[in-house]
Amino acid sequence: MTPPVRRPRRLRATPAIRRLVAETRVHPAQLLLPVFVADGLSEPRSISSMPGVVQHTLDSVRAEASRAVDAGLGGIVLFGVPEPDDKDTTGSAGYSDDGILNRAIAAVRSETGDDLPIFADTCLDEFTDHGHCGVLADDGSVANDATVELYVRQAVSQARAGAHFVAPSGMMDGQVAAIRSGLDLAGYEGVGILAYAVKYASAFFGPFREAVGSSLRGDRRAYQQDPANRREGRLEASLDELEGADMLMVKPASHYLDVLADVAAQSRVPVAAYQVSGEYAMIAAAAERGWIDREAALTEAVTAIVRAGADIVLTYAALDLAGWLR
Ligand code: PBG
Image 1 (spheres, rainbow, N blue to C red):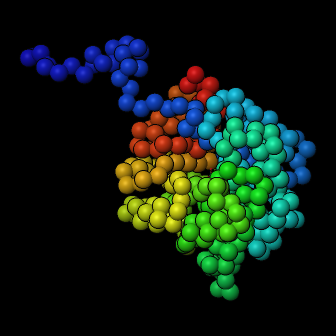
Image 2 (spheres, rainbow, N blue to C red; image 1 turned 60 degrees about the horizontal axis):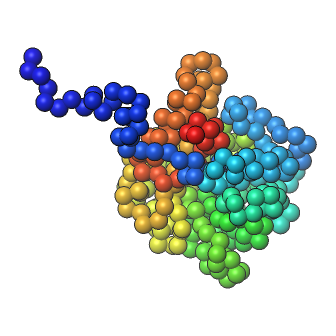
């Protein structure tokens, strides 16, 4: 055979050479840790469908936030889990100042101050007794504009509690613009918006529904996007950017790398991607059975998400990754 002119294997020969030519580097500072905080818990409770992830108490979330600072993470994303009795048709525990999420924000802010950016999930699904992300119209659909008004109340209450960023995840039309002006009117022009701009109606949210004790029957296909659609992701991303989002998110991540690459190419603001509960659970569960290497698989998955264009990655494995990357 004629010897090959190009030999790409030269650059793969040793770990030191591979490290030198790596095109993608994942750094703890670009990782956000999503965390669940449950009301009425006396100690952390494990979530069976998400091995290694727990529902925190107000005390244990402070300790988790301190660990996140020590690990050099980019921030923490807080989700509240109310007591079942506190759920109602409008999700009022989601925007009352003494709701579990607002108390968790305040607890973390008093623990870590400005050392750890705090992102609050701005959505009502954890707090409604029907499990939908907003209030229902007479025909049973989620009423867009009435829901957005409640998101504005919720975002303002989260800013008051000490959130650095609110993260609207309900996929209502116009939610980013309304929240931006609501925050500004309330004097919180310094509080930012991480917009769940491109969010698909995904089966990979399954374990999250256990994590937050969701009451949902049915699905969210009338407001979250159809997994079949790619171009629509570009539309949703540009709308949220124009409406004033400080950062955009694509969610889920691993099965939507094409969409993520599109959004990264067009966006003028930082782009985040969310490795969601099902993506995490598949790897964690297979690793528990010895079928896959947890560290290698999670590192590969997150590297691929960054390679596709994410500046920021939300991952339940953020603390583990920070340790492995060190
Ligand atoms: C809505 C919300 C969901 C997730 C994040 N925010 C659930 C949903 O849209 O059904 C899912 C996150 C995950 O699966 O890890 N508040």
